[in-house]
Each structure stands twice: as C-alpha cells, then as structure tokens.
Length: 326
Image 1 (cartoon, rainbow, N blue to C red):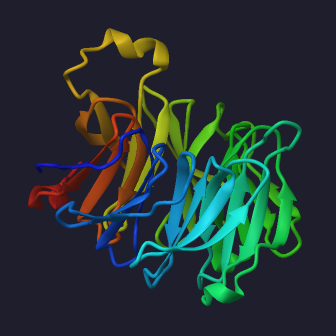
Image 2: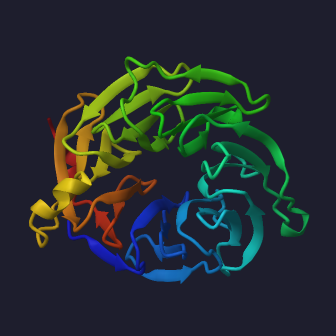
C-alpha cells in the first residue's frame, strides 16, 4: 500500500472531505486556500482563492457542484466547485469553525468560535441553489456553551443538530426550535476536549475523538455510548469505514513530547480499530507531524490523512486489507 503524497498546502492540514461519488477530495489547511484533488491518483485539480485566514472545515453538496468553507477570517463562503468562483460570503463576528450541509443541501449548520465577549454559537443558514437568491440571514442561532464548538453536524432528516467541542459534552439540539434535547453523560462521556466528530454513512451512529486519548461511538437518536477505543495519544481526527467494521484514529503526541522522538521517522500513524471488538488491528505510519484530518473514500477502498506537516497522504488499500481476520 504505497501512499500517494499530495503536496499543495504550505501550512498544517485542518480538514479533509470526499464528495459523494468518491472521485474528488477537498482539503482545508491553515494556508487560506482550500484545494480539490482527484481522489484516485492525487492530482491537484485546483484551488479556491478568497479566504483571508486559516480554513477550518468544508463540505460539498451531494451533486458536487457547491462547496462551503468555514474560516478564521470570520466568514463562511460558498463556491462553485467546477470553476472555483466565489458565489456568496456569510459574515460573522468571530471565526467560523465547522460547516455541514444538511440532507438535500438546502440548509447549512455553521459554528462560530468564542471571541472577545461573544460565546460560541451555532447558526443555521438556508442555501439557495441560485446564488442570486442567496441571503445571509440565519434561520436559527443557538448560543453555545462555554468554550469552542469544534464540530456540529446534522442529525437524521435534519431534525436535530449534534454538537461537540472543548467542554467535552456532546449535545443534541432540535433544529426547528433550538431546544437542547440531550447531553452526553458525564460518566460515560469524554474527559477532555472533543476534537472531531464523524457520522456513520447511514447516520444511525457517530464517532467522536478527544484529547483524552480515546474515541467513542454513540447512537445518534438516544445518545447512548456504544463503544470506546483507547489509544496512547490525543486523538485529533476520526473516521470510519463505509465498507468494513473499521474505525480509524489519528493524532499526535503532546507538544511536550514532540522533540524527543526521531524527526526522520514519520512516526505519526493512523490507527485502525475493529469497530465491534474495540481492538487495534494495525496502523499506517508516514506523517512527520500529528494527524489533523482523516477521511474515508465512500467506496471504502481508500482513505486519506492530512498532517501538521502540510502533506495529504492518500492510501489505496491492498487486496489483503479486505481479508483481515481477528
């Protein structure tokens, strides 16, 4: 399984997203310029220029025509995927952290960071497929908890919004009324900040990764804890295979330990766990800095990782990967 090294970013990666067809990979980094790549051979197709700060996350519409990005320049932008032109800019009073398009691509949930006196917030925006009709007004604004919300995504049928962040609590909100419906249990939940959250392909459960060196699998409707995957280092990114019962965790050492390891070794690895048995099955090494982003191709036959080292590594699995027995 030789990785394809994709060099196009000058700063650490923050987020990776495949389109629904699995032929395009979108990458976000701290260098202001989201990039799109061919997902089979890693060729760079183009960039989306216009942001003026680190880009924290992105999402792409089901038909791969519309891209939405959230950035530290206090905006979220809509782009034409094919031409790279900016279609619309949502302006906020603090950095836009997480963006997620709902089913049907008519709604987007955008989170903004705490800033000066402002608390974190979750904004729901209508997305128009005709850019000339696009407006910036929010359908709903939820005042968030203390600390940053690192990720907010739509629940099943866009009826709920699931948010998680620095206070280590997962919350499920009603997307119509803005009412808080459920909170994760202090006992079973994460002990430190949640860095990442990803839904299963069918949306019935979701996976969270945390600085407490674990990832947890939750039921989307009841918010009950299903599984916990424990590793040795803080988890910055999680993803799960749409094909096999595998979850992948990526992370890095604590900053204090970074200088003590061999700098040439590419020691930072994406660890694969069996989703049911919670056991580690293997790992893919190669990054020279902590892994900040992970994404599985929707066909389950390849995955990519983005690191603090500015590289995206694209891995197509060998045939024997599909026959791993425990």
